[in-house]
Length: 289
Image 1: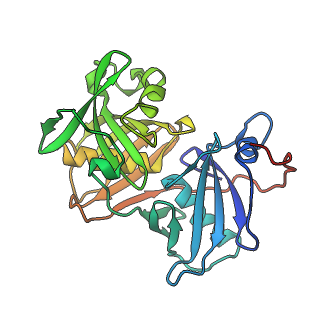
Image 2 (image 1 turned 180 degrees about the horizontal axis):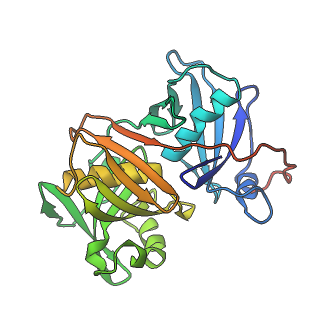
């Protein structure tokens, strides 16, 4: 499946549990020897009251993560197409909390991604000894990256994000942004104990942005749903974007629409496409590391 070019292998574990190793997940995600995907999504049954399904996300490198917004949209399309539910709105438990994807009549999916988290310790982000620059009352943190200082807004959408305005890198815009150079260094920056998704943001207007994201364990992807949410939240807090109004986020894989009221307790809503590409079977190698 794919959502705005962010592609997934989806596994159904509702009838019996899956006990795959990190090596087997890496094999599935390998674009030359396996199927190929940015992440592997595992659909699970739930016996928790008020929760329809469980949802696990494994990166292409075999590491498990808390949240994936584009995957959440594909998740709801999958469970409907597979006949696992007839509901248009479901509640799903992830490692990052409960999300509520909704199937729309036009085939797109809207997801309540929950409220953002700003406290550095909860992101998690080690802010000890750093002096942020305040803009519109929100912190831009100085990160030492490869001998240069990069300013980043830090926010969690159930997973950690560092959002950087590409204007600080010069006048070339998003296409010329140093994503390949700085992305992997920021992803593994010592200030982020669980690593971080590095978002590179270009503001076109107060309701329109462009975004590239270097994701934890996957590298740069064509789209990142939680990254789009984090970028819009940061942009609103920093005064670049308008609260309470849909913001269009152009990614390399397509357009996502994000809306946030601007309050700490307000959920972030994400709307975008979700498509099935093909269904198949694969023989996995024996368990490895």
